[in-house]
Length: 425
Image (cartoon, one colour):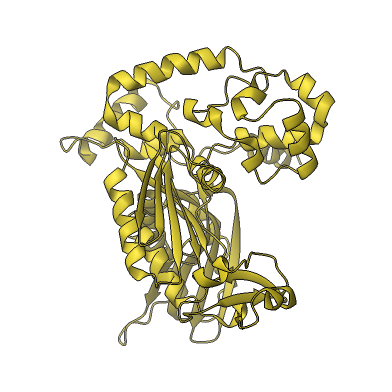
């Protein structure tokens, strides 16, 4: 099972500033130190307005700051999980796997990040059932304390754990009581379908903390006596649409039905697999296919380990005559080498020259796998099941059912239709 971790920082773009200092982009404040925050500096303020509040305020251009220091914080999380998504400079989400809630592991991440921070920098780390819920906890905590949640402070930095994870790690009896109360609440859920999973503790989420709501919608909700998420869910969706419009209900349903699964985008361009000819090697273009086949096998093993799909593949090459690069957009993202190789093979004809000197495969874009595919990858074959046994089983099936067993990639319906049209022509 995977759990969501959300990390949000303050002052990360100002690692060398110790007073009232801000980072600006297009004359607007995008980050600030702790001292500047205490004096009223907030995100989105124009630089002139900020200097009226704090005359001694110092500023630097955000584009001039290097990400070497922020990269250290990201590496702290990446060392423990390959599922990391970054949002700009100061925020990232991750997923931690385990049979039980990873309280100790997430607390260690929090402590390591705190050790990197200066006195003018802060971080908030939240752990919940999903990364989406962990992010919503930060919105909630900025307005009020979350009932029955765990809060730990270290040098002004905050570590949050959702009430649901605390109950699941404490006792099984608490889980039973939670499931009963969830059934009671689900009977009153008229706004969204039952397929949308909402933890019991999250029904107390204050709607005024939701950043997607406009001020007019907040005022109207208060006038109707709707302050918490659970109160809104007890109203039929038709009534909500008549009061607030279809855009409001659609956006709110989209937020609630969000699965919480993150889109892995870190580290960018991390997967690189290269081959280079040695001094005494002169492989011809006929060997290019076998070389790229070995590279695809290495890439497939790494994709399976990370449980991600390759969406885009870059192939750079160098021969005795020229060098170049070509890009392949995969229609169906995959992590299997036998699917990657045929699509790359069709582009190898672009390589010019007689001997090959270097080949490099890069995978810059990833997508998440479905749950079924993740389960298939987790199936381990027993040691006694050798390749000879598999070949023996295939031979027996072919003898019993001649022509029924097909090895390799099965063509799609469109490909079969296209081939039939060609045959008729």
